[in-house]
Amino acid sequence: MRLLRLPWLKITGGGWRLFTWLAFSLCLLMLGSAVLGRDGFLSVWVNRERLAGLRADLGEMERANGRLRREVQSLREDMRAIERIAREELGLVKPGETVYEFTPAEER
Figure 1: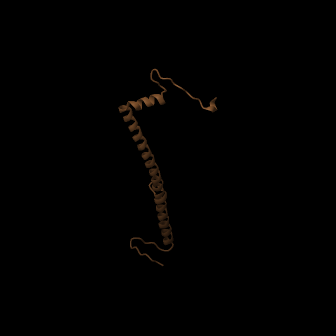
Figure 2 (figure 1 turned 90 degrees about the horizontal axis):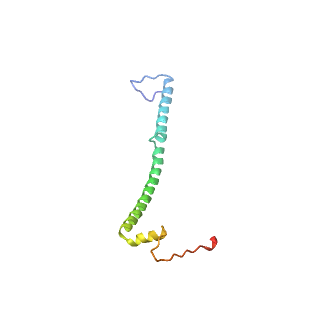
Figure 3 (figure 1 turned 135 degrees about the horizontal axis):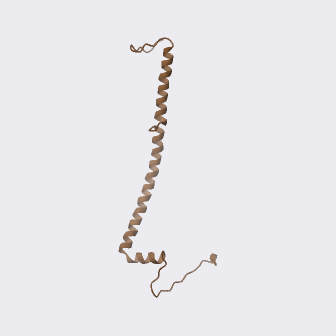
């Protein structure tokens, strides 16, 4: 039974069975490469997930960068901001001020 006649391809007898298996194997190999290959569907899907995570990280970093820029601008322009940081983070006081420290009850 011959369904396909190609004048340039002369396959007779059991050759069609071999040709069919070779064609099927080639198609299966191409499908596997399209799904699992370096630039295949699976790789694209994983990279898409990774890209979404990186974009979320970028948004978080941009917000943190904006907060830091506002803090730097505040420290350049507002003396009260500098005084607040000196008192809260460095523990500095003005001359003549008295410092009272209270320890929590658990530490006594």
